[in-house]
Length: 237
Image (cartoon, rainbow, N blue to C red; front, side):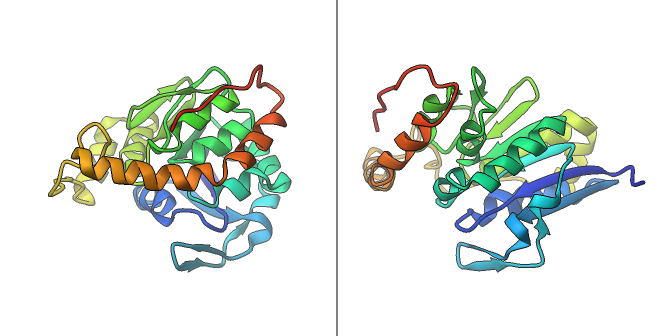
């Protein structure tokens, strides 16, 4: 029997590839760790124009030490897929840590795993967490008990280092950070709504809101089926 720690990343069509390839790169540097990228029935998935094949069959996995659910525009369909959500719930039961990147936290929410838990998400999707009993948090990475969630897309790398430090210690996390030369120095301070120029932020907010509002009815239907939701909450975008 293998003594390797197992990290499972359940993907789906429309996942944001960096949501899982970023953390995957960092997790893969760990010794005695098996990182499994899986999909329903092991089917190939499309992500940002890239195709990922030879995936593990998510339906055959019953245990993991760390569950890491990535986000992406396809999360809406994933939240409505009973077999996918059932697999997430099953893996969460055995996981030492339940984690996500970007809108992957909405999937955790739809699976009933974030009730009364603080959770991060992409800034434009964050208010939707309230529909599933979660407490939206603007942090880039937030830990609440055994749940660790990261904000939008690139936060996945900070998230991965946080998880590594939690499980293996800060020295291991820093060693991997140095090995992969993760020393972000963006040319613009426009990565968060709080720091982006007003004109840039307003355009982005309008674009993001249009995409979310077009799916508002679907989110409301998912939330109505959510067993732990006490009352319908109004969302402002």
